[in-house]
Image 1 (cartoon, rainbow, N blue to C red):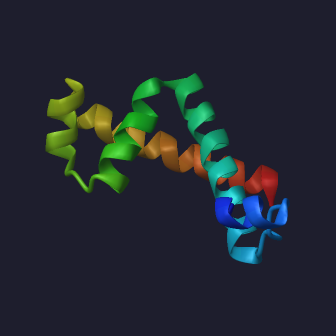
Image 2: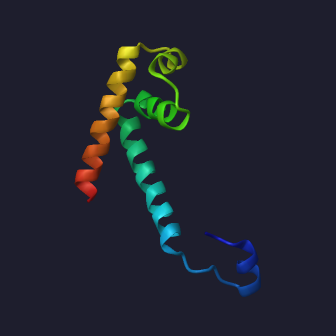
Length: 91
């Protein structure tokens, strides 16, 4: 992680440890997956954010996004497919 104090006193950033590097990769992977979801259907990423980050149920997600519960399940299925495809192509 970047430490401004160390950067100011030493003039250089500390080395990025494994946790820092993994967090960087995770952020890049998430950005790539989100971009893929948005290109297919912007609701896919929105559904996954509401479900996984905000821990909302399908009914509530449908109400928020003004879509049917069936569409929420479809978005979840599409997100799983995109994730599996990403994993297959990148690992």
